[in-house]
Length: 248
Ligand SMILES: NC(=O)c1ccc[n+]([C@@H]2O[C@H](COP(=O)([O-])OP(=O)(O)OC[C@H]3O[C@@H](n4cnc5c(N)ncnc54)[C@H](OP(=O)(O)O)[C@@H]3O)[C@@H](O)[C@H]2O)c1
Image 1 (cartoon, rainbow, N blue to C red):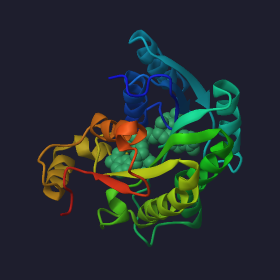
Image 2 (image 1 turned 180 degrees about the vertical axis):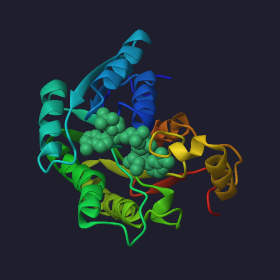
Image 3 (image 1 turned 120 degrees about the vertical axis):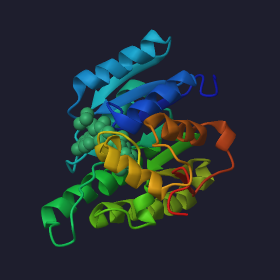
């Protein structure tokens, strides 16, 4: 695969999980990848080393996306490294909180929206000067945005907001030739959905899905790499379900 040869990509939350797998997939397709992390410096180093060991190019970049100025700081750092052109942005960093409606605090709600919605919004805003015709933005939605699964109401609302942003970003940026889409995973066995690694969690997950296996991060990353590539050149404003047929 060399569909992203000569392209530059930024993946947020690439130290672990779906972001890590996406960074590896984009690098394997030929992109130079900025591996963003927050607290996981050692994990981000490992991702950069894995990309370089496979003959690819990558560097790590840190920013706390829960901070109001985090997206602007990240965009400035990314622009310092890539210069005037960024071809792919995967705004993947996110947090989840499994909480009943009764137990959700204002602080929980604000943190979820800060990391999952405010950060991608202002990251894209701050990167607009370096996005060019042919650039692709991929956001992370979720099955939870369109189906009730677990006690995730506030988290789910952040992903509903992502689906809405995809429409508005795609409409606004289309005239510049910039595509904006999201992927909506179901349950993926990462740290965020660690329950899927237990027997009970596995049974719950398989009960949701048409395809009877628990998804791994690579299952999502391959769809991210597709949306990032020119193979998806006529797809914009869409949220692609990548969930093994969950809650059909
Ligand atoms: N796993 C699932 O079942 C599932 C399903 C649907 C959608 N998703 C979505 O997919 C995306 C990735 O999820 P995942 O399962 O891969 O999660 P994960 O394994 O928990 O990894 C989360 C990533 O986000 C970064 N992050 C968290 N808080 C941050 C902050 N304040 N500032 C900057 N970075 C931060 C982490 O960085 P550090 O570790 O370096 O701090 C880490 O790289 C999320 O948007 C999630 O909502 C996941």
